[in-house]
Length: 408
Figure 1 (cartoon, rainbow, N blue to C red):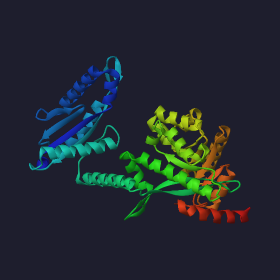
Figure 2 (tube, rainbow, N blue to C red; figure 1 turned 90 degrees about the horizontal axis):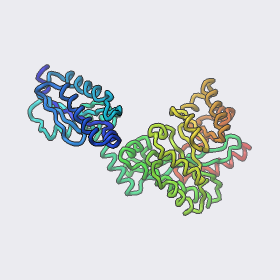
Figure 3 (cartoon, rainbow, N blue to C red; figure 1 turned 90 degrees about the vertical axis):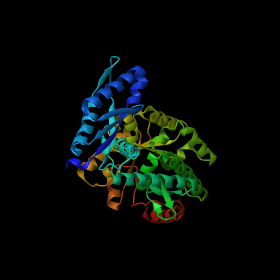
Figure 4 (cartoon, helix red, strand yellow; figure 1 turned 120 degrees about the horizontal axis):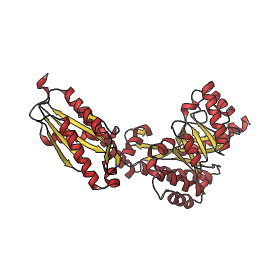
């Protein structure tokens, strides 16, 4: 009914405003703010209050709005209007708006409380991608609180050294000899036991802690490799996953060289796996420069989850990569005529670019036989071994090589 919502606070934050300000100057920025203010005035009713509360943030106070549908439609009209290109200084600019809003159903909600709620909803809207409007709800508040709790726990886990590495062996398809190990970060929580990466990696990225986890994986991974060599195990390389923030660190190559040399190892002992999506989404030259520098320093660089991104081919032409790692979504369906022909085409392409092909997610002997026949060089997956604590590798290696000698 009509009287359900007594007021609504809507918070609007401009997307990409800073870029316009930086490229075209403050005059253009000011004119853009006036342009947005005009849109807000034109889309709201006479009795609504529209204000700018800082930088590129606006607030609309709707008193006694007729319905929730009207509020939603207003938010929609604002995002659409703000997203239209504007010409400033003879240049066409595009900005956007993210919106968070909250509703009070009675007179007892304080203005401060409503602004905080609108702000939380705005945070979610921006997190979901630009140009969206989100409503505040208790469920949203709970979810945000749980995420913040997780952030706190990850910080705590870093301080208490609760992250450790698991290793997953990779073997040469032809000879079955061990090619290397992928190093996987695991969080050993005092109460919950092993927390899988699916739970903490996204949170760690958002809390800007993921590069610290990468760093631990490198250090503990290289310790593991050094230890394996000391035990007389011939482990040619370990591969570590580099997240986007890690790849944007200009000192990465130097830091990795220090870590490697400190253990009397060589850069060839370390393979850096880069997600294909990283290169596309950020489209930043920084990651490309880093990959170039790593490669020149003698580290192997491999494109991970290959075939799930879009710019695969253009990346291959401009980057010097040592290999690709076929995503398991390609490997899972084999043997299957379409998947098989895609894999064999990728293998042919990689051969001509002098790159090796690792197939991951190889789960059964039939899978193994199939990717082998398609020409994949290296296999990783449950049929070889599941990820295991680094301390269990020695036993696995002994059992595997003994069994393997029998096979040969």
